[in-house]
Length: 249
View 1 (cartoon, one colour):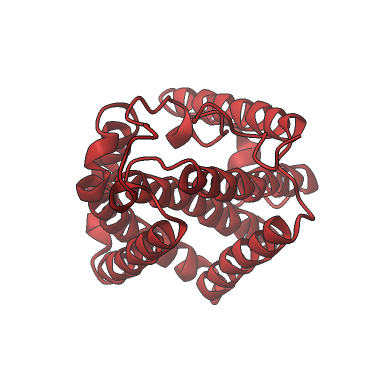
View 2 (spheres, helix red, strand yellow; view 1 turned 45 degrees about the vertical axis):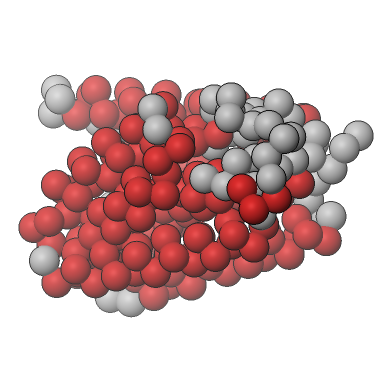
């Protein structure tokens, strides 16, 4: 089985940003117009820098948190479903706006639990580095069964989020998702979500590497970096929630 069997025909990753096909792919593209691994890595670095810059703004001006979250969501939807070719413009704006949101929400958690921010950041990048090593060394292989397992898990998590969101309109919600619920069941749920978010990074790595090998168009460097950012932001938020629950015990 191919090392990239988890993602063939471009778009079979569990990451929603990889959920659609890429009609722009063609083997006739000149080398200068093809996606490269180094290009995707460099653009991921740019997006991370913008996210950190935005977080500094959100930390100091928390009132911008929710407007930025809405802007980031809209930009993500536009990038995923409408304008992959414009990812070079939308992805940086997404990273900046989501950074502002993360800065504000991190401040909220930090006010409740001193030191939680640095713990969450350290764990997020520790997981990123560890899984990248495991992926490159072949310890974790994105097989078809692996992909299906992650896709099913993320589908269930999404349904859980949506049910909780709808219930919030009626003054309720799923208590197990509350960041102040320190029960063992609630912590176990968050730990499971963190595991699925973490393993999704493996499929993101695989897609980017496969895309570079198959010569996707150059704009896919930005799109691949954007998709990796989507997973990293989700992972960071879930780690914050998990740490908050553990500190609430």
